Image (tube, rainbow, N blue to C red; front, side):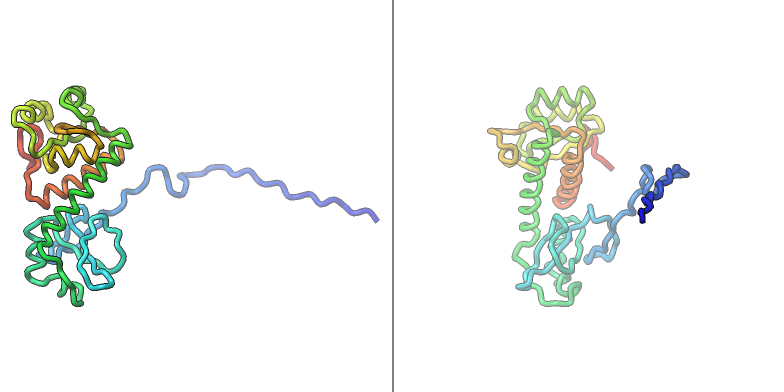
Length: 226
């Protein structure tokens, strides 16, 4: 008895109707916000600093927002961080015994410097940072710079010449020439500029938060930003 060959059913062609699931035009994700324990106000996380507690009960600043466990948030402001430590607000918010480091604001400042240096190195690897007075000036003239990094100990005349070209490009003077140079693996770095890209965007977010923490005015060229 011969077996009749069974034919697999043909796959029907699928015709596209309407917009696909997960359309190319993505919906913008809602802004993530948290409450500042010093004021009770709600801010975007980009304007806050997260703190959590280690298994040993030590308070840990979490600038990257990655440490495990429950966290509490404080506005990115050195005075607010100092206030939270002095008034034992971390213990009250966490409902636990917390060992707060001496000079917590100073510790956070040091961690910011280390984080900014790391992100500068990341921007260098991504090819999104240019250094040197002439190169930075040329980039600004061409309108291709998205931010400028000036050494906090830069000479006034050199800084004046660069900022005159900045227009609406933000200028950050948070690190010394030596700190920036170490991040880039260079001998000295007084002037630097960032070009468009993901690494530069991430660095700019942290530069803005660090500037707020140090209570430093952000300059747009020759005029202060609102």
